[in-house]
Amino acid sequence: MAALLIAPLAICLLLVMATAVARKSWLNRFAGIIAAAAVLASGVVIAALVLAGGPLTAIDGLLRADALTAFMLTVVGAVGLTATWGSLAARGTTEHKAFAYPTLIAAFLFAMSLAVLADNLGILWVALEATTITTAFLVGYHRTRNSLEAAWKYVVLGSVGVAIALLGIVLLYAATVQAGHPTLSWTVLTNAGITLDPGLVKMAAGLTLLGFATKAGLAPMHSWLPDAHSQAPAAVSGLMSGVLLSVAFYGILRVQAITDAVIGPDLMRNLLIAGGLLSIAEAAALILRQRDLKRMLAYSSIEHMGIIALAAAIGGPLAIGAALLHMLGHGLAKSSIFVVSGRILTVDGSTQISQIRSLLTRRSGIAIPFLAAMAALLGMPPFALFFTEVAIVVAGFQRGLGWVMSVAIALLLIAFIGLARHTSDMMFGTDPDPEARQGHAPQTGDRSAHGPRLPLIAALAATAIIGFLTGPFSSLLSEAANVLGGGR
Image 1 (cartoon, rainbow, N blue to C red):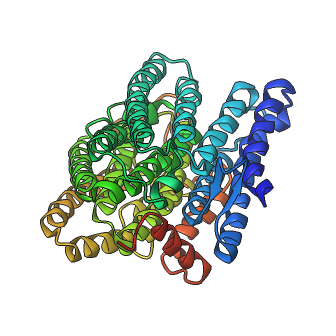
Image 2: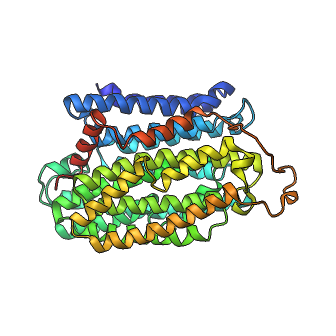
Image 3: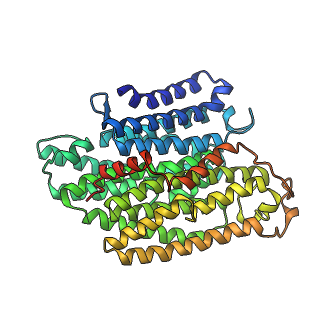
């Protein structure tokens, strides 16, 4: 069984080395898809085994898979497969020609898989730092002035964030040393009943939350996110927005489970409410006046991370289960719509909202999946985000956080109006100056998807049905919520 935990890491690592050394064009083209499929298959198999027989461990306990790990590994694989497969272009015509791109994609998936498999906060931190290194090169991949500026901004702010998180982890370790049980295993820290210094734990919790929140894109530490997500290649934007933010928030959830057991839930709850509301408020305000499609989607990601933060603050099985399902639904929908935005850039030559008009008439093959993904992100039924947002609001009122939910609903309504208005303009608006876009004149009746249809159909169909699933999937969500103390 231990091999199952090592398998996704080993396959990604082999692909890193193979694409860096062999430089075979077919391998470069499919490396990201193979890596994501391996992670997804491992997540599904591990989930089945965990539900049947409990947590799995490997390498003397450094790797451990419980229900939450299995769920997150499945999210990484599913979103990764959508982004990499959906962005697969014609043979020899894109980034796949360059060896660094597939190597960095495989390394990115390796780092995210390691982050969720590690039963050690130190290793989790190292894995998150590794995602910064790999994605920084991917953000600056196009080597334009804007992309390089975004990459440097991401490196600086991301490194500051993870450095702050490291300080928090060191303080937490110091607390365990003081208690006579030096460890960074979140399993031990959560379940062993070690008596830790509340003062040290409070400082550790605040710093770790601040650091991981930077990677998760929560306001006010989010300023790197719109630039990075708008400048990266479409697949990378989908991976960063769809799953990297969730993996970083996974770190917050693990730390929250530890600190709640020592000092109670009030500190993390208040910090997460502040971060969640501020994130939704800033995203809503900036979505309204956005001019670039990819930046608009980036701010939408900040909005959704704010929703997840509020769910974590609320706690309990309903809110935590909804938060985890929200991660999966948002990841699939956001990676799909970033893939479509890449196709729009390819065929229309711009992601400026003012230059994307009559898309439904001109290019229905692109417009229809865009509309479906946007409907999912707007939280419209039957997509999963409708049910998760309702569940989070209900859980908030049940926990006595009615004023928080009221403010959040008002802000979400503003974001909804902004996203719906921009989408309507792009779908039905009239191009004020079509001749100005040389080489990308509007076409009528183009039904081509300009890329693989199946990954987008599968991802959006999954987003539509996962809210109705029962049986093993529902059991996995419940078990994952219990791992985080969702029953408290």
